Image (cartoon, rainbow, N blue to C red; front, side, top):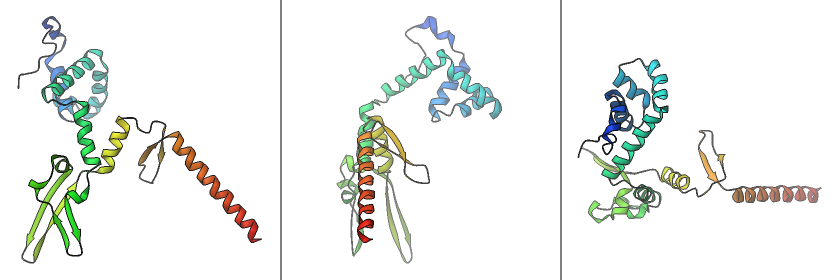
Length: 202
């Protein structure tokens, strides 16, 4: 793969980045966009200093431009497109477990890997086997359907209105005004029905 050169088509602008800045952006993109960690490694600073300076560095217009340029370059080289990413999410979100394994009173049997379609295989996160003198076990783990569905819903703005807290772990679901209104109407109807029954009992 050819080396990335910032603004290669405009050599007169290439000198506006220092070697340290280019290395910082490289590490920032390579480590999952952990700016503090990238700054510590490049500038050999303390973590406290890096927390503040990394944010200021990323706020600079020139560094933002370099990040965007490198992201576009990497996406093109790896053929990563929004459609391809969404397709992978969809494979995970809509996999049918019955296409990966069979189960019943006699136990669980995994479908042979060669018999899986590309779509079904993409949903598999892990396959492992343990063997002991007393037998053993097989384990198949799929990627999270819930996370994939949430990613699709957010990216495609399927439920645009607002979020509702659904449990103590602060997990959220995204729903629409119409659905909220429907739930409120249903709740109101239940309360009215309950009050009416109470009066009849008296």
